[in-house]
Amino acid sequence: MDIGIIIAVIVLFAVGLFGIILPALPGVGLIFTSILLYALYFGIDTVGAVTLSVLGVVAVFSIAIDYLASAYGAKRYGASKWGSLGAIFGGILGFIVLNFIGLLLGIFIGAIVGEFFVAKQDAQASLRAGMGSILGFLAGTVIKLLLGIAMILVFVISIWK
Image (cartoon, rainbow, N blue to C red; front, side, top):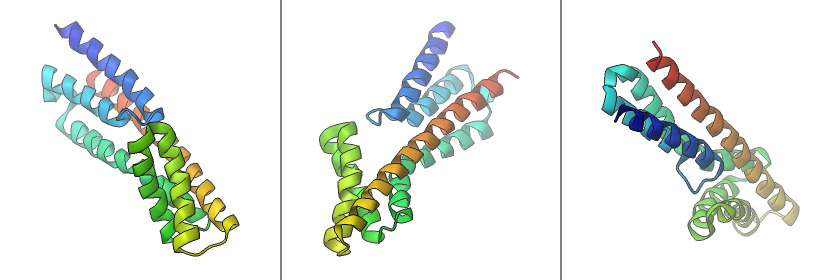
């Protein structure tokens, strides 16, 4: 049975890393779930309560990264609060409707709509905000990938003691 849990943890790690890139899967959440599964099966002390708590906080934080990074990217490229909010809401709506492609389109279109129709910016400024929100999302994905890899490394180091 022990080998089954270890295989499940490894599979969840792989699926979690894949899920970071493909937002249809809760990537970092799956990585944390696999660590939690291991800790519950073999005992919390094998991972450490503090380590488990910190990794849990990192997992929760990573959920917000997609949306916050898009909003930050839009803002960095000159968007108003309306473009940033449009990127967040557009990303959520797009993901619900069309999954990954919808997420990207929603972020882009949401920022443009927020800028053009609500903030009354010209088309060029609105497009710049849309591109900024996409770049922010991509940067957020890279950050989440690094967090996921770091979580796995911290886990491996904590059980290797």
